[in-house]
Length: 142
Length: 445
Image (cartoon, rainbow over all chains, first blue to last red; front, side, top):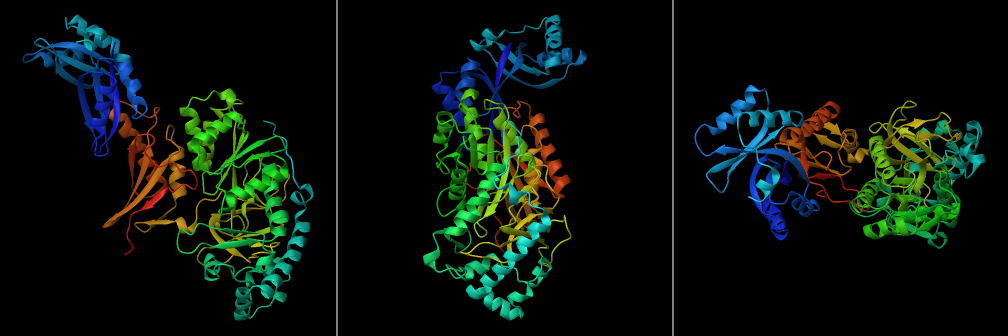
């Protein structure tokens, strides 16, 4: 199970630097990140090398939570996101949010957040469509 | 926690009302005479209105007498309202002069011993405090009446009082554990802060013996009471906690003018010393029984600075039915605000207490909040609300859902649009005394 770190970030100058500074001090590497925002605040979502350590380091200064997400392989070519989205859509599984990053080879990695009760079904249908699902160690140490 | 009803002065506290009224009339006559002969302000006022002390014969005559207001004290700064020479005054207190000069009050030995400390003792005992309790008194000591008022009241009932005063937050938490404090006395906002600190420091509940908090010096709602009781009962050894309200103001005496008893059915006014009325804020006429308006007190036994019909501007109502605890003295409802605190937002009257009422009924909302009023052509009101680990979610939809729930509830209660800003924990300045909840950025036009 891949754990994502989510941080509540007030929308003002210097906040991201504060977070990255704390992670740097803790020796935590960021693999991927995405931010969704309103005019007042944002939620920073990250895949990091050590979620436990990251949470511990950030906790005193920020609201932090861990959420389990699915990390699957996506070929770095046209149509591959479409394939994954179709497999899930056909199975009636709703994606709450997603983001992607390019790994070391020519593969892209897609991070999917699926509501908890549909999570195992999502893993089944993805595996059924021969889509590779990463385990946490592969992602954290990538 | 034993629910046993105890009294400090049973005879007075349970006196039949007719007998109490006879006592009040006798004392009122003395008060009015004292004011007329010893205080220039009252002599002039009476003469101007063509009344004399003889015009008071029954409590119904009270409406003939003028209301006293805060500016009367300011205009006679510093000692002009005193009825005794300074040589008979043993203590002087002053209120925080947020606008202009402070208001100054003086006490004779009788005022301290027989009035203020006596009433404080009754209130403490009504709230279940007794000899053997360790009271951590976190009201400010100084010109403010909170610290010393509680201090002498606690000593009178034989409790062990720790005069720690306000602030000193880490030491407060240390002493809860080291001294085994059983009662906390401070403002409700400071109590919320201290509770949060105990929680943050993961103090072992077996080390926290607090069973009662007596909170005052700022208005707070029933919903805040519930929050504080839940918070502290989750932190202490017994798993139960009682949050009680205390009311007072320096002009009348200080804290202890009225107090919750353990049943929390309204604050008992010690009306053999402080005679309450409720008046309409615009007409200054008495309101119908049970209706709310401005709370007015006459200090019928005080010598230092005796006041006739002093308008507190605090909004409440009176209940004369005998309480479950057996006390016959009148109770006033929890103060819902001050007419001075009223904000006019786009022409609509809004009280900070209404905002607190809405916030505190929403699960997961922290005890800390701030109200910001701005004017950008139109008035805008924003409430800053702290998120908690329980309300935080990685999903925008949930956070936005919380925000819109609060905004909807605000609209239902206030009939105006309130913008809610979600902020991280510990963003809103913590109060170590009286909380400053409202920031009004509007410039006078």
